[in-house]
Amino acid sequence: MAKVTFEPSGKKINVSSGISVLEAANNAGVGIDAPCGGKGTCGKCKVYLNQGTLGEVTASERKVFSAGDIEKGARLACRATIQGDCIIDVPKESLLGEQKILVDGAEYPVEIDPLVKVFSVTLPKPTLEDNACDWHRLQDALAEQTDYDSIDMDISTLRTLPKIIRDHKYTISVTMYRNRVLAVGDPSLDGVYGAAVDIGTTTMVAYVMDLVSGKIIGVGSMMNPQIPYGDDLMARISYSFKEENLEKLSKLVVDGVNKIINEGCEKAGIEMSSLSEVTIVGNTAMHHIFLRLYPKYLSLAPYCPAVQQPLDLRASDVPININPVGNVHMLPVVAGFVGSDHLGVILSCDIHKSSEMTLAIDVGTNGEIVLGNKDGMVCCSAAAGPALEGSTIKYGMRAADGAIENVNISRGSLNVKYKTIGGSKPLGICGSGIIDVVAEMLKSAVIDVTGKIRERLEDENDRVREGDHGYEFVLEWARKTKIKKDIVITSNDLREIQLAKSAMYAGASILMSHKGITAKDIDRVLIAGAFGNYIDVENAMTIGLFPEVPLDKVKSVGNAAGTGARMSLISGVKREEEREILEKLRYIELATHDTFQDEFVSAMNLPHKDISLFSETMKKVYAPIPVKNNR
Ligand code: FES
Image (cartoon, rainbow, N blue to C red):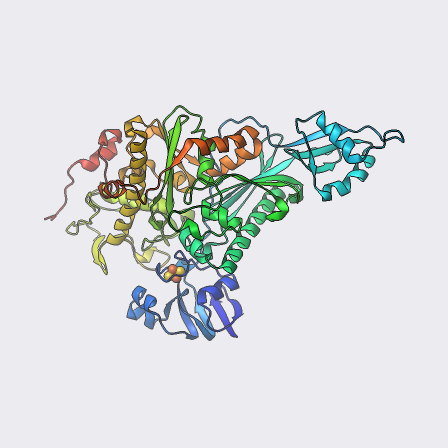
């Protein structure tokens, strides 16, 4: 055994020799960012050996670090192995930051009519002449108030029935999910509750709701506890190839869901065991891992999910710690990379009921896009990669404290103004900042339309300079950053962003061609998720993240996936519409699509074709900009 101490937290742990520093850190509760899931490719899990010995420096580490860095003790936590007692320094930029969690979603009116209902029933008292069993008398009484031909009751509920009936003088309340009795009890105690949960790859939110009023009465949220096993879905899927790892990730997310529902219940002042139903949305990988369904085949062509249909499970079978016979409803998934979270977006924004031609996008490693209306919808998943979430960007980071979230660059002087989350000195740049910085570099002529940095541009602050891997732009100088290093945008970062946005744009273009329409026919563009909530829409359109439409047609809908789960919880009609959506929705596989490659390549340039849609500021992007010495 070896004793490992992590600084500056001072957390200690005894571990077996040979395990990675990352695993030791996870076990010690030290959150080290590991976007690539420990494959040694992202370089974000940097630590320093302060005392002791670690295993030999690996080839991946030599690729990431200079000889000078290695000399100073720099190591990749996921590659370096524990060989004996040691002290490891974890720099701030390698620590997992708490991401801003988006809770709000756009509200659309819905009639409150949940599938969980409470009936007040009065049973005829048994007599010697009529001594039918309690269960039969309850069934007869319920038959007068419901349309169910048969009624089910779990043995644990049946055990409580005789006493409850008599304690309450033959008038009791019966809580039912469809034809299943969930609880029998005191009729004077009202209140029927449930929770809607959105399991995101990065964050998770639970909304505890009063199913009578349809109101949210408590919210719980947390970072997805699977993050130390990889930022993106592919890393988590690959990790789950081994049965025991799948079990580990599944337990982490199930425990996490229990924790956030309980947090919401505590805020609402109710017991979690009093909840009757939970509805859950998530992308297909999260859905599968939550249910411990082997996710390997999601990552292999033809990317087939284990199940697509909606599922209704007994809470104790999952296990979710609400009423053990309560219902856990998993909204249906659409395809291997279009999950129930996207179906939740369609459900909550009424795309399947609307006559407006709607384009809805959820930007992520796999950007989910749907286009259509009540007459039919097409959807796809664009493999944008993790650039827009910061993972493959040199100073990219999640949207946590210290992340640059918006940027403005003055034309001419190239002075940079920015805002960080939490207002502290910058640690790096997150998705919304990345969109801004590329658009601003374009507007201020730092880059041309191909995304190339104009190396001969002269600026008074020498922000454009030659770096280790080509030209780069200095966003902030080391003396003003928390990491004591210049925060730069490199030529490689720009390339990564162009690849990501081209994938998104090409996906939308292909959907438009399937519907036989152009951008002019789109009535509304909805941007879902945290990314959509924080980005500057005009800047996103400037770089070509989605098709050119007038800005007033673009709307952020916040956590629309979570809103979909909430609607499904409080409305039986919306629950039925889940199947209607599946019937109206056609999934288009981009990987094998004939025109994807062409669309992708033609979307690589940054600006748009139709600038008349832009504001006056944006139109100036196309005006000739005085560039000194630009030969
Ligand atoms: S390089 Fe270690 S987690 Fe990515």
